[in-house]
Image 1: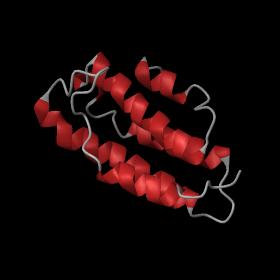
Image 2: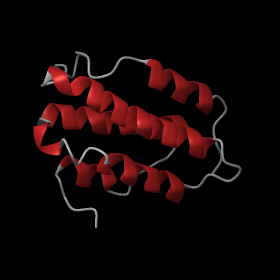
Image 3: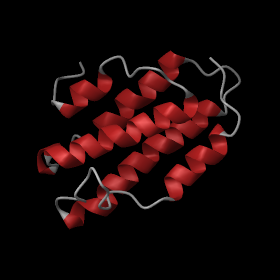
Image 4: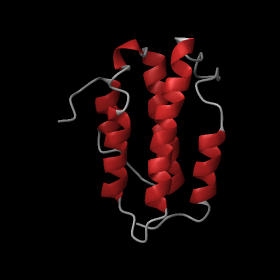
Length: 119
């Protein structure tokens, strides 16, 4: 796997943008007090992706490991997150995957979405 040209800048832009705001397909955060918490968690995942993208030999498996770690970070607030917010979190992970041209989460996002154990 190779890191696409411009991935670093795209991930940095991703980190900087406001998240969990109303969009055409998303009504906005369900519980406003969760917005900074969820934003921090998805930005940590983006920083993980940034780190991997800067490695000499990034691999799909390393990115998948970072997705698994990233989704586990939401476990302490998972029960407070409504369906639309979980879908948006998955959407953010898919944006990061698109930036680095990772084709599949190998089911990790589905497991997160439906609270299926990752063990």
